[in-house]
Structures are given as structure tokens and as C-alpha cells.
Image: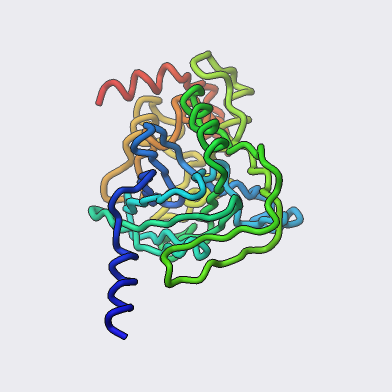
Length: 312
């Protein structure tokens, strides 16, 4: 029994000669994927509408299991995952890939998988990582090598990641393998679903109007900031302070921008400078300064965010 078991363990922990290496980083409460050999990186956020989460709209078929930017991988390739965290302990868990590993700040753990057929694989954060732990889904889309290469070209040619194209016929089923000793698993017979679109942002680099900023900023706020500060901006003091009528949201713009970009030491406020584009950050800060009755009338432009980032 020891001899075959040892062979399996050695095989499961053989991370040599991968065809693709992807770094997976957990954030509260989203995932960041870095394709280390292709210089591609993006965040993957839950895309279930806020109203569905809180029961004011009927739930969709992929309720709490859908993201704006899925992880896209090729089939028949050895994929090496480097798993870590930016803040607290998370867990990257995709059952059908045979991968479940803790994501711990300051440590990088390895795992690998090889997927046999095109399909979609869903997972979830497996650690109680905070308020929105239940809203950290994982979606992996596996496609043949030709389609994957086309997706890579698309990502390198654009300014921001887009959901993976569904260019091949729907498979009758999907399967994956972690090692010869683990039987292939078959998921439900379903076509590759269309991934939800990310919030529509104003054209990159141009000045935004108040109307554009408020519409786009509200989407960003409800998808990220409302978890701590509540949709109406009242927060949950003292841990999560209110934005409604706050000194930050109604005070000097520079201080507000600095707090959003760099976070606040000793509090739950994390740094968002690398999590959103300059356009997204300008829109959400403008929204916070003019929603909830704040009505400062100020508009933060993407150029203001760019200038603030350059100071540090």
C-alpha cells in the first residue's frame, strides 16, 4: 500500500515543467489572476446583481456563482497555480479540478491541474474571510488551445480584460483530472454560460461628466464598498464608518482620494489603488461625494487619480 500511495503523492506534488503558470491572489472579497508568462492580470468579482443578493429581485440561474472576469485556461495543459493572499486567509477551492488550497498572506503555495474537456468549473472561497466571504465565487472556463490563444491575443490587444469568448460548440459534459489516482469527474451537462459583463465605464482617459460618474460610481460602490459602508452610506460604526455626512466624503478632495488609494492603517479600510482603473476610482469617489445627501458638487477626474498615484 505504501508504494502506490507514495507514487500518487509524488505525482500530486510534481509542479515541474508546467505549460502555464497563474498566480492566484485572494482579496477581501475578490480574486486577482496573474498570467505570469503572458503579462496578463485582472480582478475577478462576483457579478450577481446587488438586488438579487438582498432579495428585491428574482434570483438568476447562477446566483452567487457568477463573476465579471472568469479565469480562462486551455485544456490538455499542465496548469500550475501559485496561491497567496493580499490581506487575510482565503481558500481557493474548485472541486472539479481537485484543487483546494489555503491562500495565506506572506506565503505562496503551489497546486496544479490538467483539464481534459472544455467546460466551466465553479468554486468558492473556503475560509471564513470576513463580511462578504459568501460573495467570493470562482469561475474557471476551459477551452481548446486555439480558442485560448485567441483569448490571450484579445487580452493583450485591449486596455482591460473582457469575459472569455464562447466560440466553440457547447460540450456535452466537462471533466478534469488532478492525478492518475483520482477518477475524472463529470459535471452537469450544460453549455458554456455567457459571463456577466463588467460595469460599463466611461471611455478611458477622457473627462467624465457628473451623470457618467454617478451612474458608474454607483455600480462600483454597490459591488465593493457597500459591503462595509452599506448601500445608503450609513456604515456600521465604529468598525465601518459612515460616508453619509462624513469628514472624508465632504471634506478636502485630496484626503478622500488618498484614503481610497492607500487605505487607512489600523482599520479595515484597504488600499484600492491597484484594484480599479483610474476611471473607476474617479467615478466611485465622485459618487461618494455626491450621494447620500452629501451633494458636494465636486467631480473627481481620472487625471486627478493619475496625479495622486504619481505622488507615491
